[in-house]
Image (cartoon, rainbow, N blue to C red; front, side, top):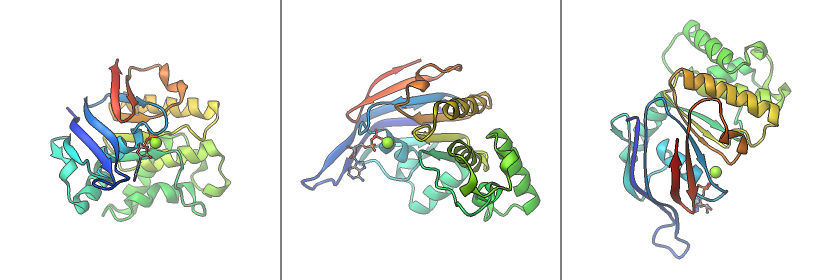
Length: 227
Ligand SMILES: Nc1ncnc2c1ncn2[C@@H]1O[C@H](COP(=O)(O)OP(=O)(O)O)[C@@H](O)[C@H]1O
Ligand SMILES: [Mg+2]
């Protein structure tokens, strides 16, 4: 089992009048190579759950184990090392450095990796190919279209070859054509046996051409999980 989430609760502002229970008794197991589509209306707790799996935040109670490691208890330094090694993030906002080229953005996560530049460039090229953006490698990000920016962000998220790919509303800023291209890239990641979690309320994800598990959230709870 790649990810085991057991009895996880998340309360924001715990102990205060504004206390808010964003996640309630979450149990979920995700196998290696599985694709999870996490659906639910805005405010149902999707991003909160992703942030706990990525060790960006900690549950109020319960535990999260990823590849045998208890990540719900990781000290901050170990949490950032875990993210740098194991996780590729793809967000609605691309968080790219606009004045740098596509390639410069893609290699950024590897600059302090200890790899030499030849290896870094080879990894960047592979990743840009995967994300169908290698033809724009030397172009400044600010001159890209929205869809191209998203593909640059994908290349950057994949450059360290993470086992777990976490996407939060990845198509929210894309038109239909670019959303379909994004889904094609996901399918190739699925074929590489990556574990993928996509939080989305985009109906395009309801009918995919590869097997996924639909996990639906309402009001901080998982209300259904089906293949
Ligand atoms: N840092 C925070 N402090 C207080 N409440 C928060 C915080 N982060 C999220 N929430 C609340 O938790 C609920 C779930 O948010 P979120 O996980 O972002 O939902 P989703 O991604 O499904 O839209 C929302 O009501 C949100 O306002
Ligand atoms: Mg969200």
